[in-house]
Image 1 (cartoon, rainbow, N blue to C red):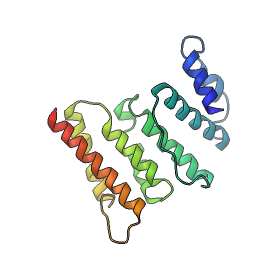
Image 2 (image 1 turned 90 degrees about the vertical axis):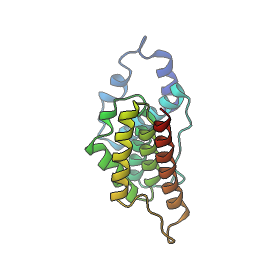
Image 3 (image 1 turned 180 degrees about the horizontal axis):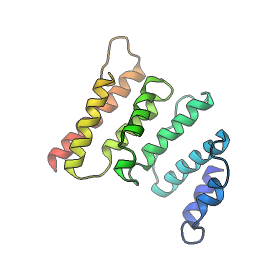
Image 4 (image 1 turned 45 degrees about the vertical axis):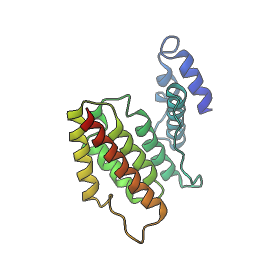
Length: 176
């Protein structure tokens, strides 16, 4: 269903159906988990259809509802960060939410994707340096850039993704 809605969105929004989101989602109850779940799935499908990206999927489809909703929120942040103002995502409220999701093995992969997408967002070199240093400090303070001998493969991969993205972003800024 989400894919069908994304095709309708791509064809009709905003020219023929400018009230797409209001008609489908905001007249109902977004506090209902089923509605929120469907809304987040549609947003991901729209992103995949409009931007033609590969969306990372969680390896475990048998997660509790709370984890699934959290993963979908993080995947939406990662998908839409290129489209929205930096201040709407890179703020204390959203970043503390994302950082808290690193503690849960079910959501840490999606939290990593959200942070990496934020770091890769297009912006001036000056803004990117400030953002990168701030995120690096927060990650260090929370022990999210450390690897021990007891860490599993997923944890090592997560830390590797963060370190790799941080390094690539800093190299890109230096070249600019």
